[in-house]
Length: 484
Image (cartoon, rainbow, N blue to C red):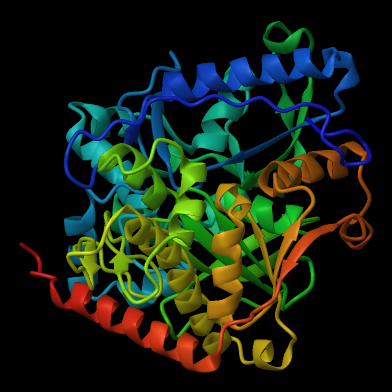
């Protein structure tokens, strides 16, 4: 919860279970998403010592591609939510590519054909839940990303809507016209009747039912998490760039009112839509960032707490060159291969927990470098701009990781005072519509630097390390056994 001066009034959070029913499959229970959301909202209201009438507006931000299909009459989900990381539709995506559809889909959506996006997830639910496709054809089922599902629940089933940023991640939305696309719907197999209305990112979406938070509160902002972080980082000028480090890592480069078609397998996406006007971005997605640290903790139990990783990495043997390519669910940008899996390179008898920690943290920096290099190649204007990377998300608390990031990028890395930039972006969109916050350029004046990490690695060391990473990635990509 944010005050009108953008300071934080209260914070609440809660984990909910992740489900992994098969290799490469990731699911959430929609009811868990809903109940945990209501609980943290109530908790935040209580901690801030306010009531519903003191809250000007609610903003929603969400994992953009996580997909829910539910019954229009009962509100019951027909299947668990299929999470953005889920790879179950890899075969469908391969078929669409083999049939030659990717150029047309990419031209309209700015995306590539990949299991990451919602469209093929919706089709999978319709084809694998008994009777679902017939029910959808009769108009009985609704589709939404998590923002849309929460909005529907918060408004007591009155509003089925999303914003342009979330719509732009479905493979079903034309980012040039700003509308759902009938050709794409037919190709992927999703009935138009399931789709939400698409609005600006800052708009009057509806209001909560009075029973949830002690009174009706307007819902005035929605943006997918990475776009919300871009807004929270005040990246409103073309050429500004942010990178968010959560479970995955996502870098966005604002390209202004022009959608830039990538030649390096980056995504062209809507950064935000205000007053009916779309601003675009180039985006690179890394599937594994913070989840590499979770793997150290929960998978191989090398650490008890994530915070141990930086100090442990600091103790690693500088004579060893251990590389982790964390392709646990395939590789994202700029490689986009859903079939490969992770690998460790450079192990010796002396390799131990410190080297594993070092390799896990460094893998995030190397992957960011790959995105950075691709963006600069796609958008030559960034070569002349003095590019600084603004960072946010849980991993940015690690000074070790942020310093290594600056070293490998050979560029400054700026960490802001308010690191909850995703939440701040959603709050800003809501507050803008509610008249609490000013227009973007004035809001940008509030951005404050907490620490700037400056590169201090020698060019020779940097080049050697990047060459080693490139060899490791090449090895992982070479392990692809094809469509089997």
